[in-house]
Amino acid sequence: MKKSLTVSQTYFLFMFFFDFGLSWCSTTLVPGLQKLGITMAQIGLMESIFWGFVLVSEIPSGLYADRFSRVRALFVSSVVLCVGGVLYMTATGFVHAVIAELTLGVGMSIGGNSLRSWVMSAIAHEQNDQPADELRLTKLFGTSQVLRSAVALCAGALGACVPSPTQVSIWLPLIIGNLLNLGLVVTVMRHYHEAPRVHLSHKETLKKGFAHFVNNKALIWIMVSASIFGMLVPYYNYWTLYFRAAVGEGNMSFVWIWSFLPVMAGGWMVRRFGHGTMSEKGAIIATLVLPALSVAVLAQTDCVPTQIGVLALLQLGRGMFQPLSEIFIARRVEDSVRTTTLAIISTLSKVVCVLFPALVYQLTSDMPDGVPLIRMIWTATSSCMIVSLCMLWLLRPRSS
View 1 (cartoon, rainbow, N blue to C red):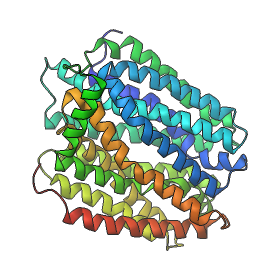
View 2 (view 1 turned 180 degrees about the vertical axis):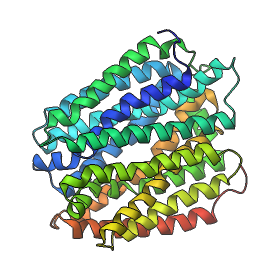
View 3 (view 1 turned 60 degrees about the horizontal axis):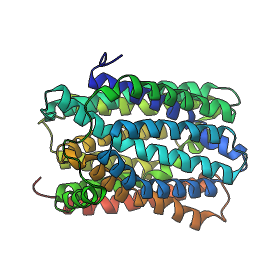
């Protein structure tokens, strides 16, 4: 299969195998954890531990990928994700589930930034060492968002339709998907030149990556933007419980499908209109305003049609923010320290993902589980996002 696929096709196929397994378990993960006797507060604590472990492992994994090989990092990531899936399949309680969650966190931190760096370098190699222009980046990340959303839509709906899901049925697709990615790495991805042109030591790479980040106000600004997006962690922790109570378990597959159609639409809008027709910073802020206001409305309304409509707006913002932020960063990061710089941005932005769930656990551990608790958490979440977005707009950089 040596170079039988283009770089874009390989990138999309890798994301397909990964996203299918992850989306399959998304609709049943939290109910599955509750079957193990894990409470809502403990689920929040697990998320805090997960993001904390991701936070401390991102920069070392970025250094490894930039110093040696991004393909090798993707290989290790797929192996670790398979191990995490097996640990979750055999989990019997809170501690075992935390170990499985941490293993998945390591695999995701190694793979995410390495994949983005690989595709940028491989495109340059495919184009005779010419970096991707803004139009190709817009089409690449916009199309990626559409395809990933379509995969998530189908896989999540199928996962929700499984009667009486077990730990095996929840996690087996993720294991299979990452085994397929191992084959893709070995047969296709390693044949593209993906290593940085200038090999630096770990110390030099870290120093240059930090300098590249600190001296670019636009990269600091997008890191803060990603931090505000990370404030949505309490929403994604509990959305399945909220909508199960609102529409019933039998209708969750419909809710899942409905929630990802707007994500697809957001990716398509970026692909179609994102090149030279919109303000980067204004568009990014707008895509964060949508979920902030949507979570505020969801926390207050009992009207199911309103809940479904607001869910679409929230997911539309998510669908646009991810490709817009990836394009924004890709245009400003140097190749020799690309993965390290991405890891620095990702690490700093994930501090919020650690603090928010930990704070939720600290403040709600003695409260009874249920929709009223979810509404209270979401009201606080949306308030923090709205205040932060006002500051983000005022402090936006006036130049690139």
